[in-house]
Image (cartoon, rainbow, N blue to C red; front, side, top):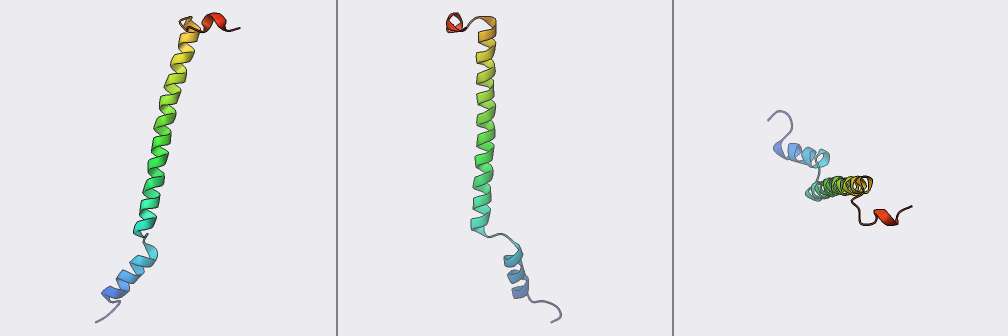
Length: 66
């Protein structure tokens, strides 16, 4: 048998690859970032709609603002 054995290959993969726990942590973090980004987009749309309503005078609070 020339070269590394299958055991050597598996051991080297374990050293250079990520563990299941590391993968889950990375996936969870990525999911949180995506949620945060989508929440920011929704919040931005709401702010834009409120601003548009105030500028056009359709806001119920438009009379009370100075």
